[in-house]
Image (cartoon, rainbow over all chains, first blue to last red; front, side, top):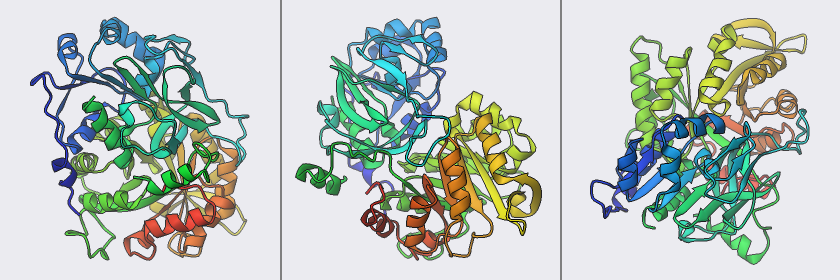
Length: 219
Length: 272
């Protein structure tokens, strides 16, 4: 097999030259993984918390694994909350990033950015003692995404598998562009204007994830 | 890209999103020494069967759901070699992977995660210093802390925890340690039965079931998988969330696509 094969098969030339693709640096994990995933599809991105660079970028990715209130506090301290809300270029929130783009998270009762009109709630497994038929929290592993809308999912078949790791989920609503079932049906994708968010990790979701990242970069 | 599921979906034979949700995971484990895979000599289609990255990428392409890289090197240069390897893996593999072997501090983990590991697994170091589990969970989140436990069933019928790759017996009961580990913040349990490991006679069903049914985190069953039916058994009867194996994949006794097709035919929810 040829490991460099898919690097050659896809190139994006950011119209903004130097500005290009920016990954927002903040106190949440998993940021490097997104950088590496972009490199796998032949894209160079910059990890930064520089407000000017973020504003000038062609595309902004807002990743993250972590805890909502700590992350929001960090963003507010640096004025990144206002910057994020006012971006006009395509923005992709991933996992915690997507949740922070919602209105409110039950995780330590956190007021979030309020871009998507959705509430973030905790999965409720039916008891502490988990029976085989019950659900474990966090959800860890591969689950399906369906009712796919917008060009973010171009070429992605209904019911494709994506990799999820999360204890909190965004409810269904007018901004839902992908749905997943775990305990109940929830938003695995959200979109409003130039803002997109996915609950799963496209950077870890094999070919399906790569397709979604490529789609985002060509929006 | 998942054409079969899409076809089923369109034909209406699969409900929207599937009622069964999360799939059972198949996880090949690669033993690494000095940056290279130890097992895996039977791969004719690889340019370098010893290259962990290439072998891992092959498994990912074949439909492995995750990978575990277990470092068995014992030198002082180890950490540097391992972090370099992890960095290469992260640049080439598009599914989640766990790194384990000799990890004993928050700093060790920080380096590995920065180089692109998704999860780390800890075993002896966590048993000797349980505080490590809570330190890692609060620093990086439970989702990246896998507690690996090697257990052996003794004549008294109890499963005891063993350390140092199975060389050192403890008086701790496996279930008690697993429960304690989860309480401290472990996000998954990687359970290996020493009685079954290497026998190819099937997984430890009862022990796996005890942990899987009573702990609120996923349990990865390891040790004993020899036939495809063994995987059906560990998912159906053992209630495992994932199953790990090494040599049967390395020596091509079972191919991952074939295994997943078999599991699906047995009504086990897998990503195919």
